[in-house]
Length: 477
Ligand code: ADP
Image (cartoon, rainbow, N blue to C red; front, side, top):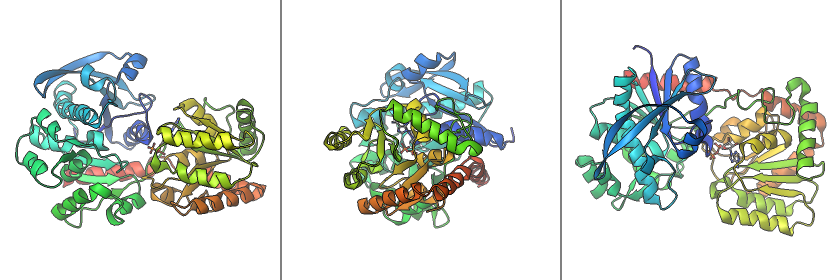
């Protein structure tokens, strides 16, 4: 076994289970790695949602000691569609069937269970599947205890990479989780008695214990390390910097998108397929079908697609929309914080004509239709680690209007393939929408921007190579 072998760990993975952008990444990066000669496998929990759709065959089981009991972990396996990448699913009815939404500690405990299970699963893989990873790639807080568990609970000496996809979700909760894991040595003492004393910060522990830490765009890497955007993570980032020295920078590698999933020439979920040569007709036909479906008139059409959480900047959008007249259509697709949903409903009920629509749902199929049929997609995020919405939109010739932050800044060239505005500024967003309308009325300029957007390369090719280099450096160090 001389090749580079990477085990990607995460809590979501397209097409099995998706909540946000990490799902897209877990479903596409392993395929891109496989193409360039990295042997990639992935492991996620076997949620009930996946079990009822996939009904996979159980290939084995092992036992772990968690809390006061011995727990059985079932192993299931299938391939990522259209690839030879193998995906493993770990099952345990009490801990891994559903994502626990009742209380932060319950969620923390269940992902601690998953991380412990993954750490044992590595030996299972080696023994039963004759495959030992050379790097473990952890993603976000849900898998951030793996580096600590590997060090403290196993004799495996495998380098770990932790990729932060969103620093805002850190897995903060009761230190009792360490007792469930039976971690009872110096590290526990440090976590319990050092700073911060009261609670465990799981992403923070990942930052301390992973061999390397990366994030999902170069600008976001700077934002969390230099601009003090990291909040509570600052302590852990500083501690790591102190321990590892200056050469250990947090690397930012931009995500890609899967062009077999997001592609107007292949997409079976859109109303009409098209390519660059049939762009005008394709966009027109798709838009006609969408506005008919939603009982809208033919006007410049703007969309928001995303989780309804504070980060995504719906507050700015509402302020800007209030200042606009009714000569546009606006369609929201998203679900999340009920207060944000209510604020959108209030704007809609106050509006004199029905040019604003909102679908408060997670709807993969409708998302495809909305991406393709809109003229513009607005991404007003207060911060955005990478963002996939702008990349997907561009692939369909839909122009992104986005805050100048994180991965949005790294993937959009202002006035070339999209429009950027000053982050956290409703007036700058309002100006950007006005600018977009002027552009829309100048068909040749608008078309030029659409073509440039569609031609921008967001495939995984470049970034997969950067990950390969990073994994190689970890194996060699
Ligand atoms: P985040 O990971 O913060 O949610 P990203 O922009 O990285 O944001 O990725 C969001 C992904 O989730 C995109 O693929 C987007 O199309 C999808 N998505 C977000 N909200 C919805 C929704 N309500 N219905 C369908 N897809 C959605």
